[in-house]
Length: 308
Image (cartoon, rainbow, N blue to C red; front, side, top):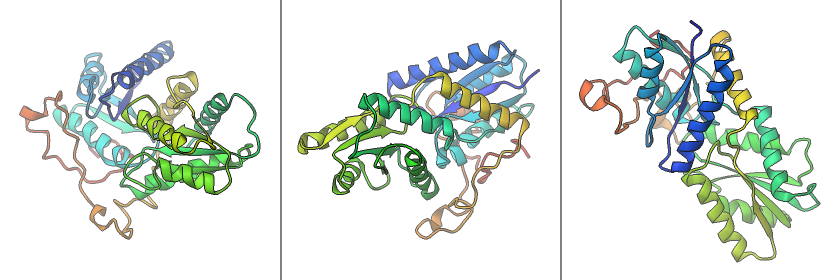
């Protein structure tokens, strides 16, 4: 049997975001089903379907070797530890199963094109002089992930007609949205398009809108617009298929050079060599099976076959 695609998301308490993830899973199921490839997906916390439920459904179809793609944009703690730990917990439950783990979705040229399309839709015209973009990522306690958002901002600027692109974060890292907008204003921007760097809807993308709207109300001389997030679309599906095929046939190398779990970085000494354990999910049977919170498998970066 061809190994199935197992998409793993973080999860959200927002019903719209959950519905978009489920709809996107259906999009991949239709696309890969024509090639005889099964598809499923689940969350590591906050929402259903769970990783455990998706894993069991695929196992019930006769699959023992899963190909997992993390539905995240940057290589932060979720991609480096939480998701591989959740998948490894399934292997512990059923040692006859295993998985290979794909890379996070970004950075990738497809994502730059999608971001550019969302920004241009918000503008409704060709970028004029004085137009800047504020790319807003989730924010992380992982310095590698925050640096990657800054890289994406620079990639978005290269070869395009924006005066400049600045990075910001909606949580856990600085600059925040208001500071990022104020920086754009100080650099001479008369019009700023805030571009949320998120796959689907949720609490944090809406917070980006709220904070941008509040800043605009306090600075009426500045034209502040908010672009749409990346969203459920064919281009994103193409990228997930690429990551699936890469994991299935290629050599997966997550960035380890600036990872705080492997390299001693100033201010992040507590992360070096820290064990990784699955998130607690209230709908996961970990409560009673003895495999929930005691299985620290170390930081594997997800690019080895589980169990090796």
